[in-house]
Every structure is written in structure tokens, then in C-alpha cells.
Image (cartoon, rainbow, N blue to C red):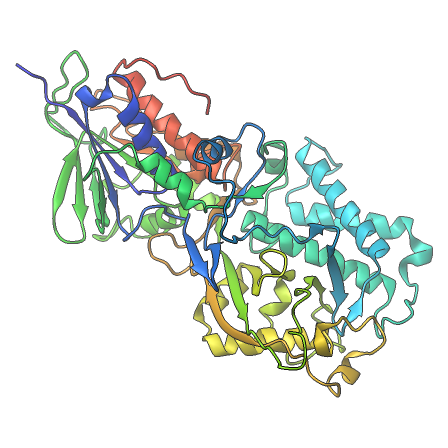
Length: 542
């Protein structure tokens, strides 16, 4: 009698889910042992990876960077698939590192900030971050990264008392301290988009020293992040990935239930212990389910755990729900803007030399010199820059409340808000004001001729399949919670083992928030099942 194959269902066709499926399917003996299926609630594969096109250029609506090429499995796949070079322009944001097109920092009102001032505060911020990430210890009880950074800024000012209140010629109503604080805030906003924490005061300080980065440069993928996803999925048989299959409920067996499930000696389960219910009313049974949904979806699930609409039945155990509740999960959105092509028969196009790589520093909230028409959501971004040299597609990043607000705005409101902001930073003909005018004078100048023809924005916060972007360790949580996220269910007992396994970036202690963290987590859970069934050829580092 031929033993029934164990059915493994993976929920989610993103990086974690497809990595797990790839590993399970390509393992030496697994095809004879497993029936494999991936169910994806959306209409595409990739999850929070979504390569698209805008203004004729290849862009990333979600995951963008390979964070360090030294040892990164994502970089290895991109190399093997020849995805790092492309004849088509792509989002590479290389201008800020180009000597011909350096990053320019401008203070509200159009005052170009001297590189020496920018560099000194940038170095300070980077040194503080390096200290936090290197097991640095501080006196007293340090809870948040935000408070540590602000203490570092105050200490810097304390050592620079003579320069702190120095008036800067040609900077209008700015003095040195105001400029330095605005530059520091700009870097904090960059860190907010890097971590997805709406407020760095909510970001755990101690966890920074556990986070691991790969060495080497950070790059984007010329042929798009989707090329990595497609490579992982290419080995799977037709029909293995089922799109438009949103799971509404996961029924599993825990210690409190009296079950007649019967395991034989080789590990195969005769009565499949897990049932998946889908939005269309259909049901699928499984021996093992790998859940790769986002932490945002899990947070929403546990809010409804005591109702009929709860995702897990019975509800997840307390150690799991408490970890889900404590960890942070934020929203980061990208805004792409296409500049109009405005050629004149007698004059060269004004943008022929390229839009500047513009870092923006804003007056603080209580300043009387703030440009009143710049919308609040623009004041929390840090830059507006072309996605590559001379591109007419500009990009700006948003996190937290402003990222969610961006999702609700009409395109016209976005265009007006960005145009108003640019009018305070650029003079006519797209030249920087060089610090010779103040904000009141700008309103009487010939307005900036930058014309935005259309916009494209991501909407990760309100997408029901994600409800956010990526995870972070919040104050009150720790790396232990990330480990708890990865623990399979049931935890112990004589019930069928490994009914529900968890993968995704929010389940990796040292590489959370990254695509390679999701990749490692998918390998981990695939290997867990392969080890359970005593399969060979499963040795991978994760």
C-alpha cells in the first residue's frame, strides 16, 4: 500500500513563501513525499515585491534595495539570473553618489546649505547609529533609539557652544543651530523610512545591536526585484501557485482538543489536521501550513481572535499573540512623480541638465517662518530626487502618518503639494536660490517652472493583504519576540506536529524587515519540514 503524501500548503506567494516552496520542491526526495500548494490571496506573485513601470522607467513599488552584496542570497540569485544589468533605465538612485551630480541640501526658503555643515551633522548621525549597532552601551536605562539620538545631538551642541548660536550669512531667518537640528531631523526621517517606525521614540534601542547587515554596497536590481521572485517560482510545476485564493480561516488542533489523528511510524498523517477556509467558501485540508502573511495581517487577525471572523481557530496561544502585539509594523510608501517634457523651439529644455538630487530641511513645527502652504505630509519627507541621472521620474519616501495620508490624497492634491514645496526650495529655471533671498521674497519671484504631469504611489497601509510595509522591534518588545514569531504550532504534546509554521521577515531575529530575512525564514521552515521527514540534502545557513 502506497502511503498518502503529506500535503504542505503555503499561504502567500512572496519571498518567504516561494523560497520555502522552491526548497521543498527541489529537494532530492521531497517530490515523492509531499503534495505542495501555494495559495495567494492577490492576483500576482511577489507579495511586498512589486516591480512596475512609470514614465518609461522600471521602478519598484515595494522592496527596492539589496542591502549589502557580500553574502546576500538575493544578490547571488540576481547575479545568476543576469538581472543586475539592463538596457532599459531603472530605479537605481545613483545620482547622489555621482561626482557630477552631487546631493544638494537646501533649507526651506531656498538657502543652499554649505556642505561642511551638512557633512558634520551627517557624520554625527552616522556615528551615533554605528555606536547603537555595535553593542554600544550608555549609562542609565536607554529604551528608544530616538532618545539616544537626541541625547547625542545635545551632547554635540554642548561641545560646540561657541558655534551653536552663530548667525549664518545669507540664510535668512536660519541660525546654525536651527540648520543643524533640521539636518538631523532629515536624517531621522530617513531612518524612519529605513525602519518603518513612525516615531524613532518607539524604536527599541537594544535591538539595534542585534540587527545584522551584509557588507558591501547597497544596490538595486536592474531588471527588477520581480526577476528574483520569478526565478524562485520558475522551478515549480504548473498549478502549484493558486492566485486569488484568500484564506479566511485556519482550523488546527491544539492540546485542548480530543483528536483521533493517527500518525504512523514514518511521519505521514492519515487524517490531515489543518483545514483552510477560503473567501469563496471552499475548504482545503493539509498536514502542514506555512503562514507567510505580514505581521500587519497577523495583528489584524488577533484583534478578531475571539469573534467568528478570527483567522485562527482555535486562537493562537498567548505567547504568540503577545509577541505579535508587542512588535512594531509600520507603513512606508513611495511617491513617484513624472515631470512634463517642455521643449521650446528656441530654447533648450530647462531640465536637460537633470533635476537636482535634493535633500530638504524644514523649519521646526513651532517656527513662525514656515511656508504656510507647504502641506504637513511633505514636511516629514527628506528628499526629492530623480531615480537615476537625468530621469524625469522623481521619487520621495514617506513613513508613518504621512504615508497613510498619502494613500488618501487625490493626484491633484499631491501635485499641488509637491509643487508648492518646490517653490520654496527652487527658484525659476530650476536653479537653487543660493541663499540670496528669503521665503517672503520667493513668493514674488517668477515661480518654479517644474511641471508634474502625473503621479504614482504605493498603498501598503490600506492594502488588506499587507496592512503595512515591514516590521521593527518596538519599545517594549525584543528580539525574543521575533524568535517567538518563528515557533511552529502546536508547541508540544502528542498531537500531529508542525501543523502551522511561520515564515516572513517578521520571524527573523537578525534580518527582519528585509527580503533576505524573508528568504532565510522560508529556507528555515522548509528545512524544518525536511528534517521532520528525514529528507537529505537540507543543509543551508539561515
